Image (cartoon, rainbow, N blue to C red):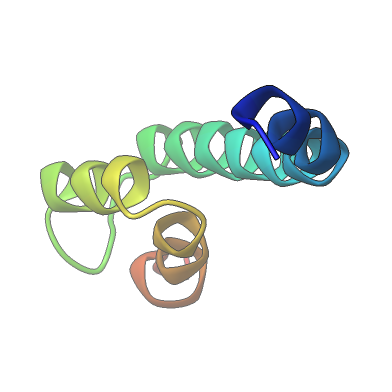
Length: 68
């Protein structure tokens, strides 16, 4: 099986995962920028959200947000 056939086979599964990841990333960054206070420094949360794919934004929503 060559790479093109493999990509065509898995692309329908990868596109929804990519869309969810991008949505979580954007939503988490917008929420982070709107909040005055977070649990930890904002620069650290930006790094976690951007570089820890899929899990980073979820961790931010569970741990990083501070109730106002």
